[in-house]
Amino acid sequence: MPVLQQQLLRWLPIGACLLVLGCANPPAPPPSSSTPVISSLTPDQANGIAIHALGLVGTPYRYGGNTPEGGFDCSGLIGYVYRSSVGQVPPRTVARMAGFGRPVAMSEIRTGDLVLFGPSTPSHAGIYVGSGRFVHAPSTGGEVRLDRLDGVYWSRQAMQARRP
Image 1 (cartoon, rainbow, N blue to C red):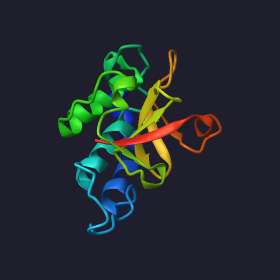
Image 2: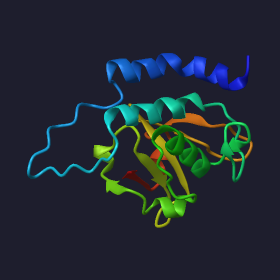
Image 3: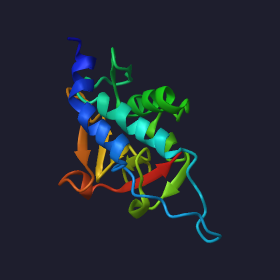
Image 4: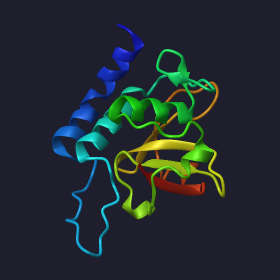
């Protein structure tokens, strides 16, 4: 069985939970005059992004990579998932992603949002998939993986969220 199919089968139960039970996103409050609507993604699109990203866990890291066959770096992974899932093409570099979409308070982060790491100019990014977790392509020799924002390493990094 091809690697991509194995990865999809491994993450299918999680994706089904996200999609069917809606456990990826807490219900959004209804818009009011004091609550601006800032997301251009529908809940279905956001869940589709999360499921697609989860299906790529285990794909090898490759600097400059932007396909499942050739591997991914962090921005290549984000570009591939957004382009394939919702037809949006985010900037190719993490530094430029810092201006993509709108800033979101970490307390307001939702499935499909981008998480960026680094002090003034971000140097790493991933896709938030709900429940305090994000998918990213971490480093040379590694693989696309699912990590927790409150993990020992990531919780110590300067972090911001962006909503396309």
